[in-house]
Image (cartoon, rainbow, N blue to C red; front, side):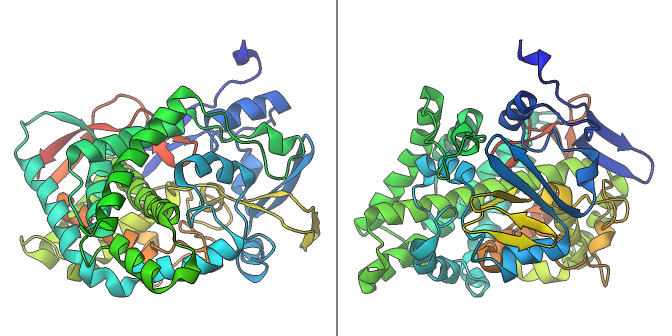
Length: 468
């Protein structure tokens, strides 16, 4: 019955001897009706944008009682996320409601005084100056996965999304919690968050009917089970730290110490759990998604894969890479940055206007849904050369994107606190594995990029791991 009101767009993918256009939904030429928009938003938040949205600009339309503003031009992005950030500081009700059951009042969805108290604390804990302390963990965990891949039977297939999620979950567990998570617990977190995304309501009808806070999401059985799997693992590790069994160098132990010294921060046990869960989920999910898309792009762009291999061979000379090598791997970094351009892990940055504002010639209503959409901005035809092509060279040397046209980690006061950690981790993991292996997807036809909370390949990415 629903097919009468909604039909998903076909997925486009194109490859040639020297070019690759990775999978993306064909832009719509005609707008959907209200019911079609609602169905599409619940299915895939990046699946139904109009062709006109793939050019820079600002667009406004209504859905029921709510103004929706699409901010898709660098000057407008700066207005919303930097110069007038105070008006647009708050995450949208859709995002807050979708994640509050899982993350409580964690930094990613908090605002106001809670955010102001905790942001400096969390930013300090994941600051780039602490990378040397986390480097051995990144190197050890990535090296251990390379060893497991080397021991596999030739021709075995694996789900790269699950492999990368286990890799990044182990890294973030040992840096956040100071202890090994183990494959069983990591899989609990991975499967739990997958189940949670499957059942979460990312549309929130109540908000569009006029409730500025949106409606609490329906906690279906699948949603509860997904959240419980994640929370059980995190609670067990937090409890160990509170009982004195934590590693002194871990992020969580730093939070525990700061809690004892600074009670004014309001870091009670629940807040500790919420911040630990937020750092853990953000730290593992986004990097796992990024690396999965990276393997997909490299497998279909042999010229880029070859350039990466040559750089790794020249710089490393056969020894395993270390965090200190990351600065000397510009092409590996460019591959990561180009993948972030095409497949930003959080492809929609949604905000709620706390008061009226004027953006260029457009009046913004109080309570409006304001969307900065990296998925569109990074593919804007008037901002990028061949915007749908995978071209890592666009991030080499002086060829840098225009300011505010590239925002995979957001920008302004709410830029991702773990940006340096995540980029370093991604480059190191890519280098460690690509030095010894090639990844070859086995499914016929293009993958489908799907976003409900984060941007994942629908049904994962089944691939063979081959020795170089």
